[in-house]
Length: 132
Image (tube, rainbow, N blue to C red; front, side, top):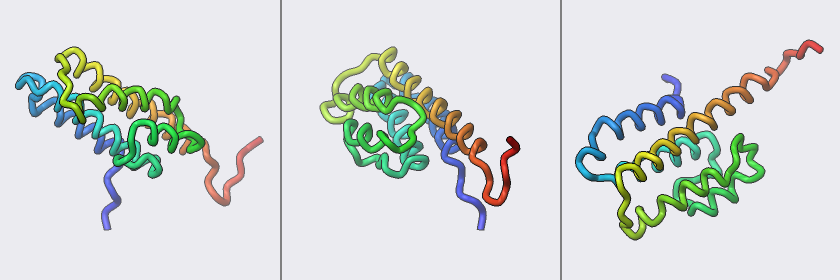
């Protein structure tokens, strides 16, 4: 069977798609922001399964503490808390605010992926010794 698609590639493709469908241009600023947050959450759940997309912002933060999460979990929590009023109360958000949320979601994925790849390549392979 073919290998499963890579989480980072899927997230990058989804971010591109979110921009390409023109939600901002259509005035769907909240949907634009929430789409980016959802992509970030799916990515995080793939890399760190304890960060289920169904968890609240604070639950995600608690789940990531002690999970060798490579960035401050508070950064994720802060973004999720910014998105909650949009998701649950249909709070208005302007285009600049939506772009800021989207940019931060992309930045979190980028920063986590970069650190995740570094850690993955730094772990010695079984049966191989590191040179001292």
